[in-house]
Amino acid sequence: MVVDASVIEKKIVEGCIANDRLCQKELYDRYKDAMFTLCIRILKDEDLAADALQEGFIDVFSSIKTYKFLSTLGAWIKIIIVRKAILHSKRLLLHEELNEHHENETIEWSESLTGKDLAKAIYSLPQGYRSVFVLNEIEGYSHKETSDLLNIAEGTSRSQLHHAKKLLQKFLKDYRQ
Amino acid sequence: MKKNNQKITEDKMWENVLDGLNEYSYETNRTFLTNAINTLPVYSPDENIWRQIEFKLDQKKSNYKQNRNRIFAWSAVAASLIIALGIWKVTIHNKPNEKFTYSEEEIAVEQLSEASDTLLNQFLAEQCAALPEECDSPRFTELNNKYQQLEEVQKTILKTLSENPGNENILASVRRIENDKIQLKKQLLKYFAS
Image 1 (cartoon, rainbow over the protein chains, first blue to last red):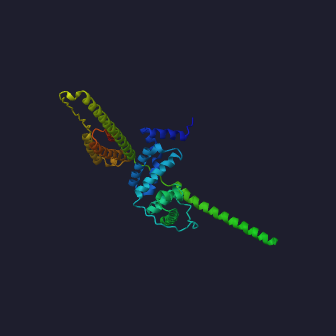
Image 2 (cartoon, rainbow over the protein chains, first blue to last red):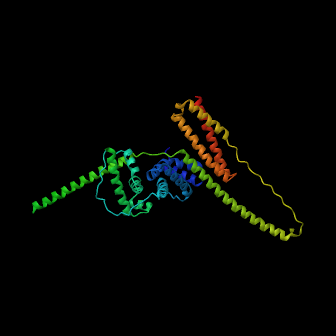
Image 3 (cartoon, each protein chain N blue to C red):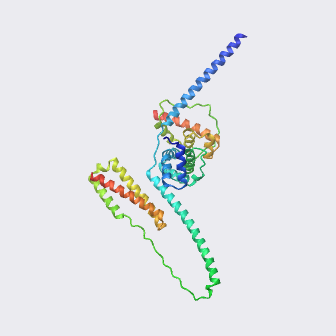
C-alpha cells in the first residue's frame, strides 16, 4: 500500500505539535541535510551554519503549531532557516544600493561547468553577492522574495545577482587557467 | 508592390528565426548553469547538533513546567492563606499558639563515571603510542571523535545541571549521554581487543 507523503508529513507535524520527540527527530532527519547545505551556502562557515541550523530548528519546533499547510512543509521550514542564517550573517552583509540594469547582458556559462567548481567559486564571492545568488539562483526565490528576506531594494537584488554572476565567471575562468 | 510585400514577409521570417536562435542559445547557456547547480555538493550536519537541539527543547519544556508550577504554587499559597485567615478569624484566633516545624530534603546529584573516563583515556593513549597505525584508522577516528563530542556535550549539560540542581529533564539528558558513552567505550575497547 502506498501512503501519500503529505499524509505522513501531517502525522509528523501533529506529533511535533504534541512535543513527541520521535516525530521531532523524524522531521529533523528529513530536512537536516538540505537546510545545513543551505546555511553553509549562505554563511560559508561550518560553525556558523551549525549554529543557524540548531537555532532554526528550535524555532521550527516552537512555532510548528502556526503551520497551516498552506505551503509545503519544506518551504515553510526553509524560510525559517534562511531568516536565521541571514541573521547570523547580518554583520557581514554589505549590500550596496545599486540599481543599474544589466538584464540584457548575457553571461556565458561553460558546458563543462561542474558543481564542484561552481561551489568553490560561490564560496569565494563576497557575503552580499553570495546570499543573493544562493537565494535567487539556487533556492529559486524571486527578486521580490529575495529583497524581502535580505531587507534590500528589488533593484539591488537584481544588480547584486548580475555582479555575482560576473564575478563567478571570473573565478571560474581563473580556475581553468 | 507584390515584390515589396514578399520582401517584408521574408524579413519578418528571418527576424523570427534569429529570435528563435537567440532563445535557443539563452536556454542552452542557462542549462549549463542549472546542471552545475544540480550537482552542487550537499553537506550533512554533525550528529552533535541534534543532541544540542534535544537538550534545548528539554530545557524549554522544563522552564515552561517550572513557570507553570510556580504560578500554581503561588496561587495555592494565596488560596491557602485566605482560607487560613478565614478559619483563624472565625475559630482559632483565641486558641494558644501552635508551633509548626518543617524539614528539607536534598537530592544528591548522580555520581558520574569520571574515574572510568580517565582510565579509558589513559588506555587509549597507551594503545595509540604502541599501535599508531590502528589509531589512524577511519573506524577508530570516528569512534574517538564521537566519544570526545559526547564528553563535550556532557560537560555543558553538567554545567547547566549545577545551575539547576535536581532538574529531572537535565538529569534524564545526563543519563542518556552516559549510556551513549558506555556504548562507545565498549566499542572502543572491542576495537583494540579484536
